[in-house]
Length: 465
Figure 1: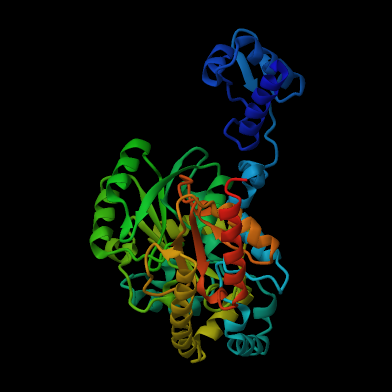
Figure 2: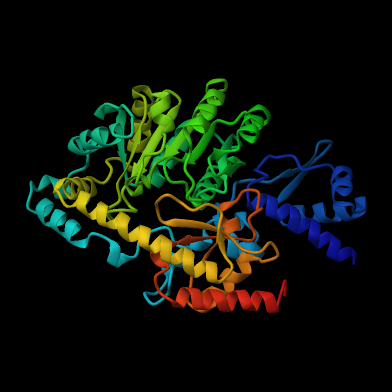
């Protein structure tokens, strides 16, 4: 029994070192303190520390205690989360969806089906760019990125009330890279970042890479819970708040004007900077309030891309913010990727300006509305209900009966060739065990609901097995 307890302590410390809760040079709790914390004997902790020291993971300093030995091990993001929870960690859905064979159904992924995408628009743009000046095919981009595209983006975001000159817009290789550059600029390890709870699962993964403390703020049907938001600012003094504008991922909810003003009042009273991810802007039927518009890009940074509506292969994103931050972010971009993706920017600009993109969006919104309606009806038959009925977009955030574990349901469905997105993958608090996010565009094959029905019946027949 004692050996089992010693091994438990060794695993406990080992996991903290792996997930970087304990960094090289960090002092471990005293043997008495850890014994009290884990309700174990002092001799058990001493033996565990001695074994860890023998493995070279920690070292004893006479008169000072035990410390984590260096150097820092390479970061494995999968080690940040317990392997027993691998089916609900923030990277599980993406890895399963990206690696899936064509016959696998993906109602849990975050993008449109391939046959919904504007292939001819992209082909036409590629042909046009391939016949242009040869330097487009071979040269590095300018630091800020393609000027005509930045001018187009300035006009585009102005329709949402966001005023930015082209020199206040920095092109990136994706929306994810935009957030990564911002994190590199503003954050240092152990800084605090607020996210919505639930939120886009890759926010969690990216922030973990930057060794950031993540605090989730409950998200309501009209925006973040203001009382919890204020308390988080007061308690944790966060550096950034990362959120979706327009259509929220995963809930499909929309920030109201009243809630937007309340958020900004709290931001103005703190040192907080807001990162507003507007990746679903072109799917809106009616424009929601933008924090960046109300704030005038003073404390709010606006980002976006076109991977959801145009192409996930033609990777181009952008950052819009005040000039002094653009200057520093541009330097970081040069340091980390040098010139950016010139060719993709040219293709994107051509695809956005050939006259067919607007028509495609109009048709896409109609198809998404139909898909939303049909998916709601199919889920209703299974006793699955939406947390809110979205005005537009891809996603339905749905609640199952409280005793259901959607991670197990997702695992069952995966074995049948259907990839789901269980709720806790989106949650810092892990309070969404009985939620699933559905991509309505990816739910048009009846097999999705047949397999989901089987999984629910299996969960009912074998609860917590």
